[in-house]
Length: 83
Image (tube, rainbow, N blue to C red; front, side, top):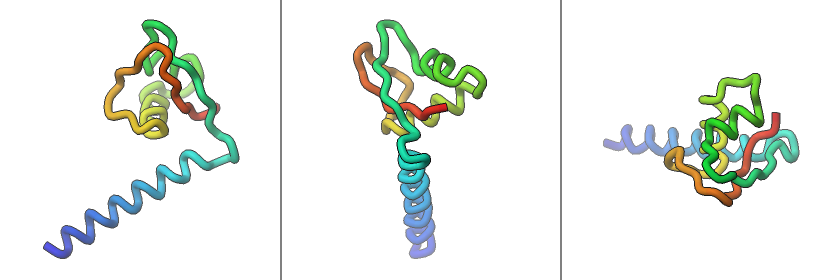
């Protein structure tokens, strides 16, 4: 039981450390975009980083914004990684 708790805490610590670095790398490696009417995360990712795999960019956007799903609303402000 104790080993399980230690493993879970270790995984949590590694996850939060990675997330903290992702937002702070490059001294301003993030910008803000406003979701347009009918726009999806996939479209935003493809527009901002057309040469990258949209799945990866969508994941980065989700992580930066603490999104639990892929649904966004018009007018919503999202932090996105710069290319």
